[in-house]
Amino acid sequence: MRENSKLYTQNEKKGYGLKNFNNKLTQKFFKNSVILILIMLICTMISMFFNHILISESDIVMVYLLGILLFSFLAEGYLYSFFASICVVLLYNFFFTEPYYTLKVNNPDYLITFLVMFIVGFITSMLTIRVKMERQLVEDKEEYISSLYYIERRLLNVKSVENLAKVSAEEISKQINANVLVEFFKPSGSLLCRNIEGVEVFSGNIDCCACLETYQSGSPCGRGTTLFPNAKAYYAPILSQNGVLGVIGVSLTNDLIITNTQRAFIDVIAPQIAVVLERERIYEKQKQAQMEIQAERLHADMLRSVSHDLRTPLAGIMGLASTALDNYDKLKDEVKKNFLQSIYEDADWLNELVENILQTTRFEEGRVKLNIQQEAAEEIITEAVTHVKKHALCHKIIVKIPDEIILLRVDGVLIRQVIVNILNNAINYSSEESGIIVSLYRKDNRVIFEVKDSGTGISQEDLPHIFERYFHKNENSIENRKGMGLGLSLCKSIIEAHNGKISIRKNEPHGTIVSFYFLSKKEII
Image (cartoon, rainbow, N blue to C red):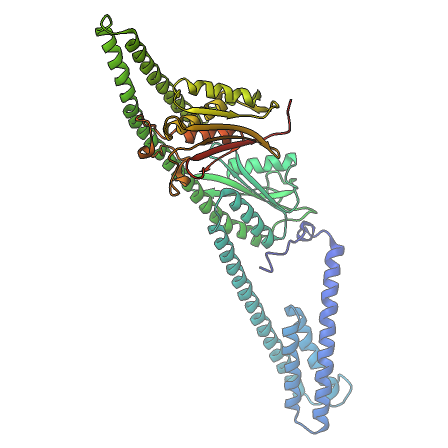
């Protein structure tokens, strides 16, 4: 990619900047002249030695022709080879034909020798230069194909749209040796991602308009084109069958223009970028479709679970209410009170189940807005324990809180629901008269809530799945009533929405400890 790594100035292309251009010509002329003088000097010295030892003139001619071939290999251009052929003829005439050390020719036969010598030298030098140029073209093409192959491999290995923009900008910048902008757009026309390799020179008003015009029209704009020629960069579209997907920008400062070879390189690499970008879009669509299918399955599972879990308490409520109505005068007040207590407990359980379902649905749809306020952690725990004690009279719930008041900026209602869900699990999976300890303490910059029970515990294989939705172990439940497996999953969503963390571990010798914490500054009264 030697040609791809060079940018020719616009002034040189139009005939301007003559001083710079003439300097380059002078340097090239001086270099080739020195090479010519050295080669001719060496050939003359060798020929004079051959002449001294009486070697034939044809061998001397061959020495000069060899010098022409060597010069053609080292020098650049047919014009210099032409001068080298003339120089060889003149040197041969000056040193090796009578009269010596003059340009006169006594024998007319030498004129034919000079002509043949010139023609052979010039033709062989031209062929040498052509072979050299062909070899250079082959090497350039091989390097060009190798570069394209390497770039395509890198593009095919990208894993995201952002990474694609970064890799594309890096590789184009390497090949063109300029600052490069790569922008991708959404189907709606809004910007998807943007990456710049090098210096930011693409934010000017003219360049923004040129970039936008390139995206809208699908045609190159900017410097070197008829649209927005005063821009600092050249902009090319990234096209696919579905239209324009993005724009490639190449900065052209100091009156630089992009060469045809570089345009061709961008035209080749842009479709490759478009293919990878389309692949990423299709992957995202498939991923979204799979998520929607999974969501539909979860919703179906939830509906089946809801219908199953609601049936038992509703049947109990209806049965107790029907019995009480049919035998109201015959039932004692104590029996009526027990009926009402059972109805209340079932209704309260149904209320918590429905609340968990609603909150889970809101978190799935991203419609939960946290009502963050300054709350006293002690009050949150007290409200949760008071609520749970209404239907957990047979369990001993012990609360351990510090003497000082710890203030947190949280959604108090949601945190209370987290503690209620954890306490309900502890009640369901521990025997009556067993103790449940609710603790609150501070450790470093963390405020930690902890619920400890002495129930049946959780097996080691179930621990990694305990916070998954719809996961529950009914065989370990002490209560007859079964849950849907939403309680701890909802707790995890609520805590993480507060940038906290929840965890579960075994309580030795038996039982479970569920704890969660928030990062907090030390606000203690």
